[in-house]
Length: 115
Image (cartoon, rainbow, N blue to C red):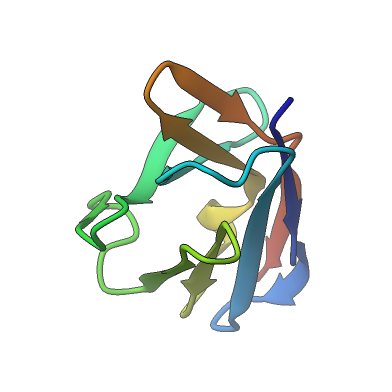
Protein backbone atom coordinates (compact mmCIF):
# COMPACT_ATOMS: atom_id res chain seq x y z
CA UNK A 1 0.00 0.00 0.00
CA UNK A 2 1.44 3.34 -1.04
CA UNK A 3 1.54 6.13 1.52
CA UNK A 4 2.62 9.72 1.15
CA UNK A 5 4.30 11.65 3.89
CA UNK A 6 4.57 15.42 3.65
CA UNK A 7 6.95 17.51 5.71
CA UNK A 8 8.32 21.01 5.86
CA UNK A 9 5.28 23.03 6.77
CA UNK A 10 5.39 25.65 9.47
CA UNK A 11 4.98 29.29 10.31
CA UNK A 12 6.78 32.00 8.44
CA UNK A 13 6.52 35.74 8.01
CA UNK A 14 5.40 37.29 4.77
CA UNK A 15 8.23 37.39 2.30
CA UNK A 16 9.80 34.27 3.72
CA UNK A 17 10.40 30.87 2.18
CA UNK A 18 9.55 27.28 2.90
CA UNK A 19 10.33 23.94 1.36
CA UNK A 20 7.72 21.23 1.44
CA UNK A 21 8.70 17.65 0.82
CA UNK A 22 6.69 14.57 0.01
CA UNK A 23 7.84 10.99 -0.02
CA UNK A 24 6.03 7.93 -1.31
CA UNK A 25 6.57 4.70 0.55
CA UNK A 26 5.26 1.21 0.13
CA UNK A 27 5.70 0.74 -3.62
CA UNK A 28 8.78 1.99 -5.36
CA UNK A 29 8.31 0.49 -8.82
CA UNK A 30 6.35 3.37 -10.22
CA UNK A 31 7.00 6.46 -12.30
CA UNK A 32 5.04 8.96 -10.26
CA UNK A 33 3.47 12.15 -11.44
CA UNK A 34 3.38 14.52 -8.48
CA UNK A 35 0.99 17.32 -7.63
CA UNK A 36 0.55 19.80 -4.81
CA UNK A 37 -2.78 21.19 -3.74
CA UNK A 38 -3.77 23.46 -0.91
CA UNK A 39 -6.87 24.22 1.07
CA UNK A 40 -7.29 27.40 3.04
CA UNK A 41 -9.78 27.62 5.91
CA UNK A 42 -13.29 27.91 4.56
CA UNK A 43 -12.21 27.44 0.97
CA UNK A 44 -12.12 24.60 -1.52
CA UNK A 45 -8.99 22.66 -2.26
CA UNK A 46 -7.09 24.21 -5.15
CA UNK A 47 -4.32 23.13 -7.47
CA UNK A 48 -0.87 24.58 -6.80
CA UNK A 49 1.61 22.80 -9.01
CA UNK A 50 2.59 19.52 -10.61
CA UNK A 51 5.59 17.80 -12.08
CA UNK A 52 5.42 14.64 -14.13
CA UNK A 53 7.92 11.84 -14.24
CA UNK A 54 9.71 13.50 -17.13
CA UNK A 55 10.08 16.76 -15.23
CA UNK A 56 7.42 18.72 -17.06
CA UNK A 57 5.81 21.19 -14.68
CA UNK A 58 2.57 23.15 -14.47
CA UNK A 59 2.15 25.97 -12.00
CA UNK A 60 -1.00 27.75 -10.86
CA UNK A 61 -1.16 31.44 -11.69
CA UNK A 62 -1.55 32.28 -8.00
CA UNK A 63 1.96 31.05 -7.22
CA UNK A 64 3.70 31.36 -10.57
CA UNK A 65 7.14 32.85 -10.23
CA UNK A 66 7.27 32.03 -6.53
CA UNK A 67 7.51 28.23 -6.51
CA UNK A 68 9.84 25.64 -7.92
CA UNK A 69 9.43 21.89 -8.07
CA UNK A 70 12.01 19.20 -8.04
CA UNK A 71 11.77 15.45 -7.87
CA UNK A 72 13.99 12.51 -7.19
CA UNK A 73 12.58 9.55 -9.07
CA UNK A 74 15.02 7.15 -7.47
CA UNK A 75 13.88 8.14 -3.98
CA UNK A 76 10.22 8.73 -4.87
CA UNK A 77 10.28 12.22 -3.45
CA UNK A 78 9.20 15.66 -4.58
CA UNK A 79 10.00 19.07 -3.17
CA UNK A 80 8.00 22.26 -3.45
CA UNK A 81 9.99 25.37 -2.72
CA UNK A 82 7.96 28.49 -2.08
CA UNK A 83 9.40 31.97 -1.94
CA UNK A 84 8.00 35.44 -1.30
CA UNK A 85 5.23 33.90 0.75
CA UNK A 86 2.08 35.89 1.32
CA UNK A 87 -0.57 35.64 4.03
CA UNK A 88 -2.95 34.32 1.39
CA UNK A 89 -0.66 31.32 0.95
CA UNK A 90 -1.75 30.14 4.39
CA UNK A 91 -3.32 26.71 3.92
CA UNK A 92 -2.98 23.01 4.40
CA UNK A 93 -0.80 21.72 1.60
CA UNK A 94 -1.42 18.25 0.20
CA UNK A 95 0.81 16.08 -1.92
CA UNK A 96 -0.70 13.78 -4.53
CA UNK A 97 1.02 10.98 -6.44
CA UNK A 98 -0.38 9.24 -9.49
CA UNK A 99 0.88 6.28 -11.44
CA UNK A 100 -1.43 4.32 -13.69
CA UNK A 101 -4.57 3.64 -11.68
CA UNK A 102 -2.80 4.56 -8.47
CA UNK A 103 -3.92 7.91 -7.04
CA UNK A 104 -2.76 8.66 -3.52
CA UNK A 105 -3.01 11.73 -1.31
CA UNK A 106 -1.00 12.66 1.73
CA UNK A 107 -2.41 13.88 5.02
CA UNK A 108 -1.24 17.43 4.49
CA UNK A 109 1.20 19.82 6.06
CA UNK A 110 0.18 23.21 7.40
CA UNK A 111 1.72 26.43 6.15
CA UNK A 112 0.96 29.63 8.03
CA UNK A 113 2.16 32.98 6.72
CA UNK A 114 1.86 35.97 9.00
CA UNK A 115 1.89 39.57 7.88
